[in-house]
Image (tube, rainbow, N blue to C red):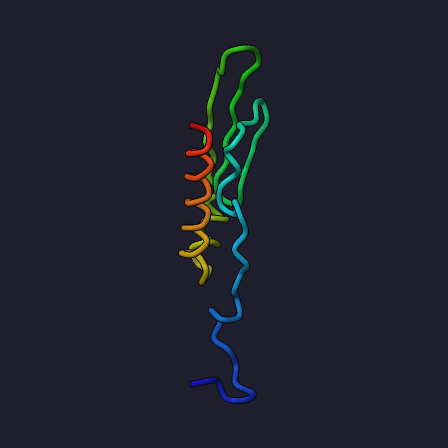
Length: 93
């Protein structure tokens, strides 16, 4: 059953966001060193001043995470983002 002409769509239908590759996670196929790398929500920094890694830090943008949780496309985006990262990890091994 369709919507009547002139009716207002529910908020969830109005807020549809396109699902973008790596929208939540940064790419992990090649790790950047000595600079922060971030997706919309998660990120990292690997400090490697010479031949040894001296520090690894994972970051989380809680405000962006809350925005994601409120998005009607969260489940689809989360699955696509996680699946993409898993495939990138599989390709590295």
